[in-house]
Image 1 (cartoon, helix red, strand yellow):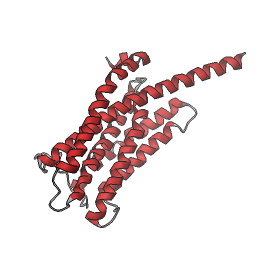
Image 2 (cartoon, rainbow, N blue to C red):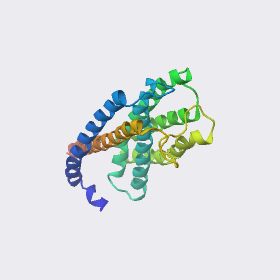
Image 3 (cartoon, rainbow, N blue to C red):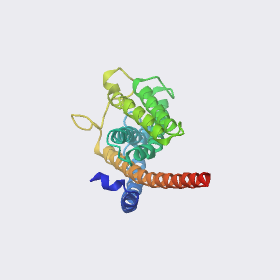
Image 4 (tube, rainbow, N blue to C red):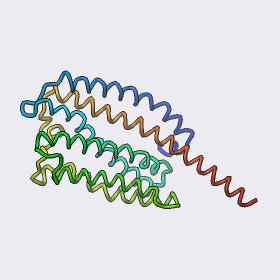
Length: 244
């Protein structure tokens, strides 16, 4: 079934249909989630209003891991099954994931200063997220490091798959090592450890960020497909002129 969307025209029609269904709910959820986070949720009994950074920091951290996982899966599909849109999907997702990771690091630093008394510590969780950010940058660099685009795609795909080992390290670092970063309080076997007045806007922001990613991914894939088509037409014209 997925092979039928390898056709650019068919994919563009699907993307045009789905994008509004992702973009509008994303905007609504993020706006409403921010309203509840800033004006309706209570301050933390220890952290006070500083805890409101959580409503951006935590969903950004979720997305940093989710986007990289999607890149690794797309890269594997591209290498194994040679699906023409798989590498394109990973390429389109990389800058979005890098932005989410940067937001995660920035908001974490802003949150850490009043809580820990410092902007940064070489904590297992923080360090592994920083490595994830460099993996995103490395993926994008490898994509454009070769004259042959196919070679760049393969090299970047291998990096994405190997780098995926960092995802479970980030997730379980607070359980495996003694870190300053607090342990998981939302995704736990025993259930969430925060009140619904905080959990609901947090989930709204998380779902909003996810839908925003889906809309932006489709838009970037359409743009990259147009760029490839334009490059292919330019190369064909250049070869024709050389032959003449």
